[in-house]
Length: 143
Image (cartoon, rainbow, N blue to C red; front, side, top):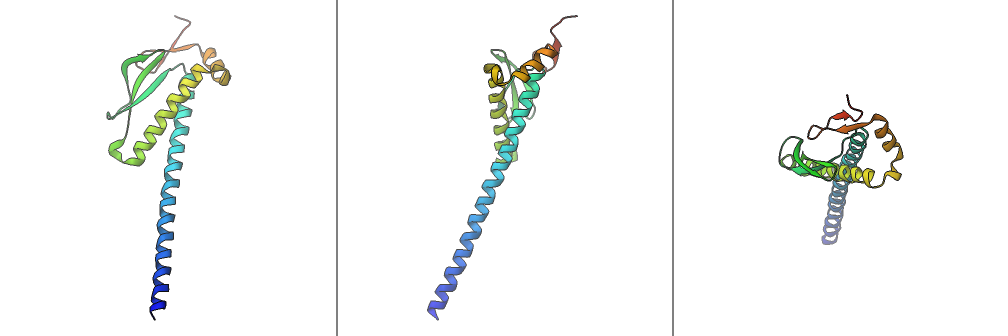
């Protein structure tokens, strides 16, 4: 009888362990997928902005809106982007992943033009320059 109780207890503990491990793995997979989606969004947004002539770098802040800080770093405008910490860890991780990947992609396109020839050609063909603080474009060709 005691042996049967021990075996049942062992089986229940193994089942619980499998369920806990499965739940932790699902959580890790969910975080990885969301972080990857945010990273891809940051890379795509940086490429689009670059093609439009916008040279911007994001810094995460507690503010609730994206806006120009009035500061620059070389040819980059520094913009704030909400860190979403008040919305929970997933939202904060996604905001961080977006900003890190956006900034890395923007810097890479400026620093290594040979890797992004089509983006540079598109940008040159449009002949646009960003207006400070607005993220809009002004034609370099003049009036």
